[in-house]
Structure formats: C-alpha cells, structure tokens
Image 1 (cartoon, rainbow, N blue to C red):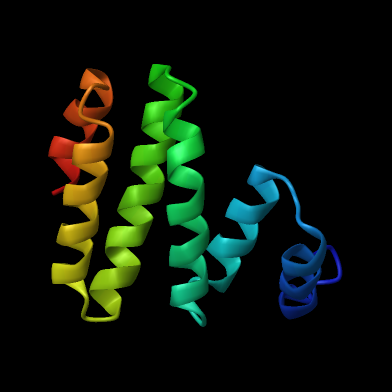
Image 2 (cartoon, rainbow, N blue to C red):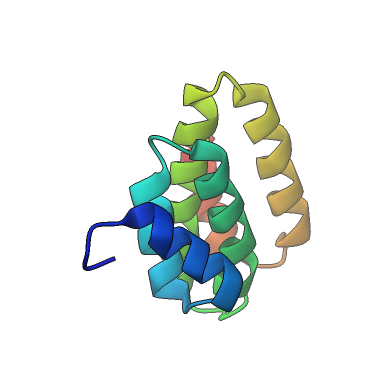
Length: 106
C-alpha cells in the first residue's frame, strides 16, 4: 500500500491475508471503485468486532455498518441493506448497547 498500488495490495491481502486494520484500510480505499469488495470486507468483520463485547467494539461495528449502508445506497440497494441490518439485529439482539447504536443507523 505504501507504493500506492491498491490493486496489488488487494490481491496480496486476498492471497495471503492481513490483519483487521489493514482489511478496513483496503476496503476504505477500494470503496469508491469496487464497492462490492468493500461491502464484503466490512460485513465479514462486523461479527468478530461485535463479539469483542465492549462499547468501543460496538461503536466500531456500527461505523462499518454505516459504511455498508452508504455503499449499498450508492448501488441502489437500500432495500438489501435494510434486510441485512434486520439480520444483524436478530443475530446480536442480546447486545443491548449495540442495538441502541443500530437504532441510529436505520
């Protein structure tokens, strides 16, 4: 990434993996041109982040959900996002503080 070759960094990450922070950074950089790639990364990371079970993690996961919402809206898939958000609510309904954050998203 330091060479500003995001496509190569993406390929390397897909082949060899990378840590959560780097995935988020790559997804942020690819979001405009490859929104579906970014959405997939964010969605994959939301669960593990929520499972840390602390308010900072919930806030981070909510931030990723906001990014997913925006990208899906840009793709004309707002209905699909609402369905996804409903699934997240069902899966994490016991996380009351996280549920409060989700109310603000949609």
